[in-house]
Length: 283
Image (cartoon, rainbow, N blue to C red; front, side, top):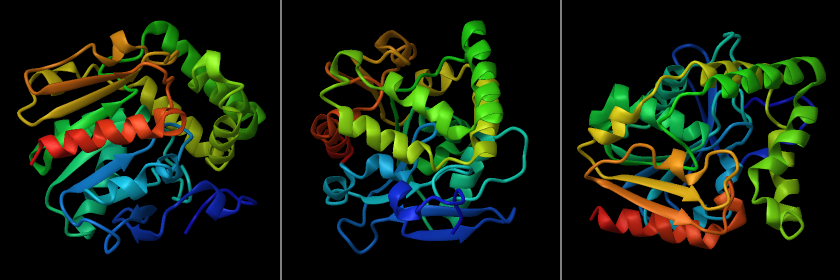
């Protein structure tokens, strides 16, 4: 398994398996196989500068209802960081598709957080026939605005100039509800610990990929499978109006009033309920 030098893998990832993709990329992932329900398969995709550890507070409960596959995206957690200058959303989606193929998984439910939502949309666009349902968690179908693109450039400059640790120190507190930072001090610290495990090159290449992603509203508007969209009422990164920018006839929307951008750490019980109820509705 791979990871950032000097970082204890067990502190930044819950991955318990790995595969080598055709490109040579070693991709690490968590698999609950043999620990609970075997069907349906639920693929959980973490956010930017995160890892499979983002799901550590909700995974045991969800494994009672589905087989959980939670990869560390390329350049994140303990997965390898390929040398590509840009990690496009399509490339991330291709990694997931190849992972599921190697595991012999023909169909799945996929839910992505933030960056993971962008990847989920790209996956649904390219491999939609493999999904029985999908969802976005604190994510959006909208492309980056001009201002957001400028912020991506600033992020890349910080990452490449000062390193991931400095970037994560500034980023992570902004992901939590601003009026609950003192209350959530331990969760913020955990988010930083996970984020520091991100490779410097991977963080910059991912930022470039997010900057280039297109509007994918049609993926949800035209979806023929159920879609879940979860937003945080106190999300200062992707507010509810952006999260709900595209909906369709098969869309379920949930707003978690006390959550910022990190409900899996801020209010895990509420998020577990939202995902569990969505899975139940698919039966």
